[in-house]
Length: 212
Image (cartoon, helix red, strand yellow):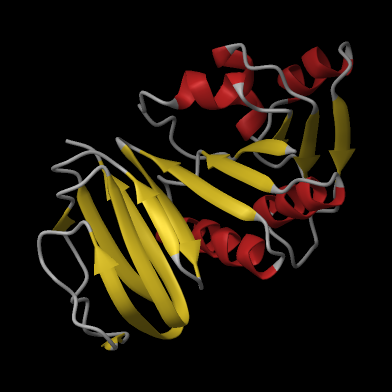
């Protein structure tokens, strides 16, 4: 099942959003993400969160629909994004696309990136839609779909990253290259093919793809 999760962040401009929405089986809004969905006329299956960033007027509008509303306690360890991810997994999602993950406080943005790690740990495919691009995380060989000239950045997440081989990038990465925190050698590479292949032999890679 393909699941779309809408967080309470910036509304990004991305040419693929309409396609993503059309291919989605289930839509979950984390708290204030429901406001964006309502304004954009995106159907919503479930709204989940403590509702500290969602107006009562919007809640009432959804109460008169088939949308499921799950209210969580305000005193909780989990972010609303974590609640949305876990509910998607409970529903049987094997692919999750995240919107509204950027903007606002930097700690919130970093926490949203961590959602990709949570999905990876559950063996669920995850993608975060960004302004003119996207981000994914992987601890195994992966193919990145892009266009020639796109900017590709590869950084470690959750410890050291070891890459054994790369195909499709302008600046070569030697076999067995270690990527460590504090030395971002994988920033701003350039795609020379429409597919970039990355062979990972250790750690997790956070990969960004930005279109021209």
